[in-house]
Image (spheres, rainbow, N blue to C red):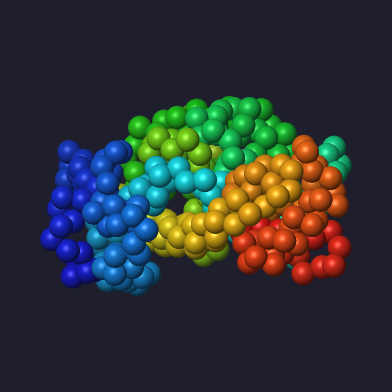
Length: 357
């Protein structure tokens, strides 16, 4: 993998600080530095070819060291970090679309049949106060990750709500123990923090989807993002074996050194997910620019509010209540936006239509 990494990487955002025992596993990343490749992404240029090759090559893990895989993961996350810090108007739509993709994987892993379209329907077409159903609640769990302030995600209350949304019985003690363990993980190196999130999910038998949710929340807090970006939930291949639940007091989280192959797998998954998020942001940027270009031509009242919703949400239902806009006016506005190729109709239905970038 090293052949794909230019010499410039020595000055990049990925700052490697080995632990005192010189183990490559204790890899930490600078919080605010920006990779040269990330700077390119921030200016709208594609991800550097060497990084794409390195991340793709990381899928053949046996031939590479943990340090090599961590280097590629750090570069990919740094590239995403530059995109996140731009705080573009369409960032909300990007996070929510990633949340939908993660929910689709989680629902499939749970043995259910709902696809992305069904999950959108479950949330957008359910009236307030009604039950969203098991699949809809999983989607809401991932939307919570994408929309709540990152500083609030790992509190006892937030964790309790998230666990219930994933179908677990209310357990305030579990939420409290999990919150305590996650606070300890925040002090670990990036690789150990990532692995520790999944080990904690196994210890408390809450499922690998929850482990991915926790890892994404920890990453957002570590990097100082105002909102988390759903990443690892989309990686369906994140296999974790179930373990018998043990008391956190009696079992410290397994260190990254005890499972280097597992750590490499998780870091490679994080790298793939980070570049996938960068690619989606680039795609939505093109669509958002087209929407913003036609926005001045829209004469409907409150059209600016509709544009803002389309930029901040995965999708908007045509019957949604928007102040200053009648149902008929909203439908006409969406028809006009589709005609101008500024938005897409996502449901494929003649009624209960749903629109988004």
